[in-house]
Image 1 (cartoon, rainbow, N blue to C red):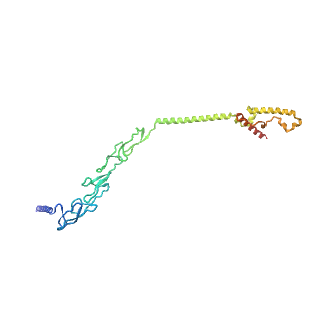
Image 2: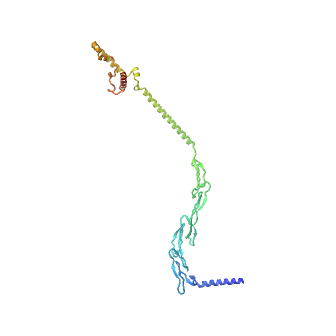
Length: 322
């Protein structure tokens, strides 16, 4: 009984379907009034259904909308917006939707029926520090990364570089490298450098001692010549008490002898009354410096310089005696 009912229901459905197909053609649609009306063409939609002898009235799609197939719909589809890694490859028209392309640095996660039209784009993945890029990302696939091998490092996650060999640079390892950091090297102490530094320091010290010795020797030579120079005598007492061998002494002795002889002659001629006159003082041997002509006027040699020095000493002595 139950199986017979199901069989009848199945047959009724098939008959209904065939009846509907026969009622509306491929270019028609079933209206709300249960009438088969002509479809609107691409780029337009139904404004008013057909009725009786009046056919379907259609209206074009507005800007920003489209209809890409014959239809019995009353609204157009909205044009797609290209954003988030997408750009407009082809503009939207009333009969075709926008075609979006993929920007650099992104890849398409989902395509539409058109392989050149992407509906969802995602940014390429970046490899982490300690990794490197095996396969760069494209517009159709993401970036592929892998970790660096032992002895290599990648601080920015682009390429893995080998650790620095400190021995090649004649250095020693100061800090061990990691997958994100290179080995740190430092200079090692070189015995040749130490020897060169020692020799340089020794040469500087010896040169300094040599310069010091030369300076002391030069000073000693100058002091010797200054002490042995006759111009350096400044003590009047010692200069007068000691026998003088200077040319000035000879000149004074000669002039004193001549003056004594003249005075003796005058003394024999003058009367006894005149002996008490002040002029008789001229007959005595004179030790006044006025009798000696001032040196330095007739020349400027060593004898004149010595005489000038003696002259100053005698004047100072006369002033002290007065």
